[in-house]
Length: 112
Length: 507
Image (tube, rainbow over all chains, first blue to last red; front, side, top):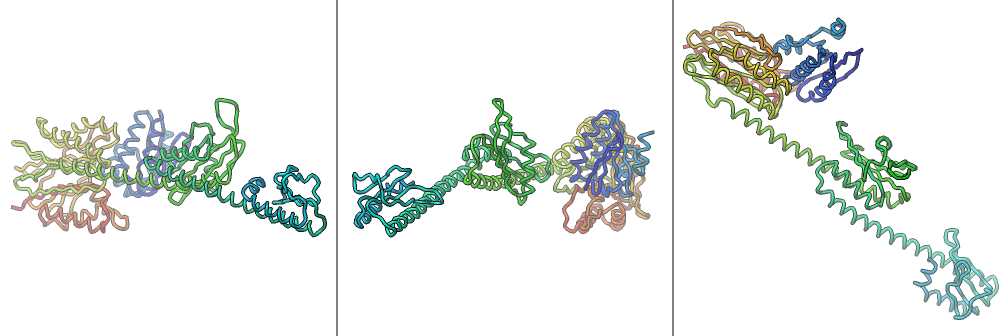
């Protein structure tokens, strides 16, 4: 897996490429831990190029979302491929997260 | 040097003097800077020599041969030849002295390096090893300051140690490290400011790159305020750096072995916790053929299953999966299983929905604190009307295979335990007819990877369950494990594989 991070305005964007699983979670968790601990943080996780997520990876995203909420911030997900979206559907995490089709629409959601 | 040669070869000088006197000379002597070191015969001070020949070695005049009482070109030539011969002897003597000194230094270095090896044997971490290397190098080369650094392959925890304290700018030292790494050469810098409490001082630094596992991942250097680093110093420091390389590699290997052993111990313990807490016996429920099994992965996950059987209450069963790996996942699995088990056992009128909701309330805060969640499927079976009531909190895959129709994936209607403060899984109902089958598995089945990295997936599972549906519950479980093994082609499991198979008996 490859991870890239960038700042667009005040939105911290994380892009994950390849398999996001137990073996690749630590650097992602460390980055999310850092950015979501800021009050009012705006974080976007772009999963356009993510091919698979396992339960440990899902738990990392859930933890980041909870921390964001605790600090009155917002964490959004975007750009899921069908197999990845199916994992969110099967675990009903599609109910817990705000998921957008692509980065543009997610960025609009931040401004609204 | 001429004095030393005279002392050791006095008899030969005397023989030379005797030969000159035999040829008619009145006196023969050897002088250095106009001071007569030796002369023959005794008492003749060669105040006015008739012949002189300088003893020249590498353009340096070491002394002079003097003869009195003889004149002429022939004698002059003869005296010059003697002086040249003496110069050559002196050169040989000088080389011999240098070789002897080198030999002594080399022996000293060997002894010092042996002691260094012995000293470093007891160090178990890279930091301790670096400290020992710097300390020994400073002692052997008599430098006032020293440092060493190591950058692991992951570059996460770069290490820099300075002795006796942080008196050199770390930025400069890292700059030397990267330069030496890029050039694959020693670096020598002068006039470097030392950060000391006393008067401002400068020093010179000799930095050496150190190869660790084929790449220049480490380096060391010494700083001297008093003298330059000599050629033997540089040679010795290189030998120390090479020794440090071996020692760092040994330390890394030890750490890897230790970590592996630790992981193995932790996983063995996690596996025991997990397997020992699973029900030891399968329940006997009238009209149902039940089988359950769990195959932990090497890095044990948090899978579990459970049966709750109580006189006068409907039979309940649970399959769950706590996120994470290892001992922590096993312990959290124990917590989850206990929470669900106690609710199902002690609530006045437990239903899957109420047990799930209560368990979520109990576990939500702790799960939030440690950043995990647990998917769970809780079922309750009424043997009178063969109705299955279930609640599914983010659990998958759960497959209902009617005896006469296509299989159905029973999707969760609520999130896993620990995701939201309130769990919204509701009671769902299903009537099992004779031959109908329910397979509650964990994602270790659907996520199992094949040789080409492709996941087994839900579609293959549905097809597999349909193909196996005529078998007994145990036969179906065995067929599913077999199919997964074939798909994996020897690849080890990434995750635990756990399932409960429940089939309504035909008669």
